[in-house]
Length: 345
Image 1 (cartoon, rainbow, N blue to C red):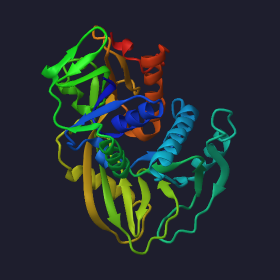
Image 2 (cartoon, rainbow, N blue to C red; image 1 turned 30 degrees about the vertical axis):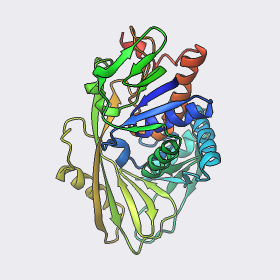
Image 3 (tube, one colour; image 1 turned 90 degrees about the vertical axis):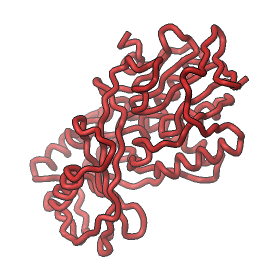
């Protein structure tokens, strides 16, 4: 008998798999590998909300758990999936730079905000008022993360490639059974597809369409992630990511002309070099009405759990949130009340 069945294979599900593995738990992942928002996520981890110069909820805890988890993945796979790189917030005017300096002295922000105003000599980027540097930032190649994870657990014979059939799940008092698999618990980490899940479709999930561009700028030498009204992030060679959109109204599962126009218009406010759009990607993020994840136990089926709603910061929040869930399942510790699904029951 397995300890846990995980349904899904996106950022949330893969994070759960590693956290459980680190705790010595046996797992099986069930996935049909259909494209979700994780496949287009830029994978940026950043403890700041840079529009308002505020810290992300539980930012320090999340960063610590992220680094601990990826240290463990490195130990298991010899692959460091983190790519540390400084996020440079481009100031639109001198008033913003003055606000940055002032806020960087606050006790809740000083660990994340470098108080100095920096000038970057980057040919082709307009930033007359300078930049503010964020500490502890980087990105994870989400496609590589999911690929490495599935390969590792496939080699352990812990991955089943098939569409999940909810009618085949039987929840007993002390275990669950799915077809020929018996496990102590099952965790659903399906992203936006939770809408089809009969156990948790009552949760108020919100679709949020995100679009990004992969552009080619041969003459741009950039060693930071520039965050302005959109972000510009070095990828490899002369390729860069531009993102992202946040659209709750247009949830059609195709890239949109409006999304592309939004990204290019804002990019051209500060990038003054010619570029080529190589790829236009999109995905539907699972977001929540209160911007907190859905984590917790089904009200009637005690061995059925949910791990969802990570939103646009999934790489950062999922390690900490998954640790909370695992401690709840196996040690009876409480889940933070702001993300426990009890708030909706």
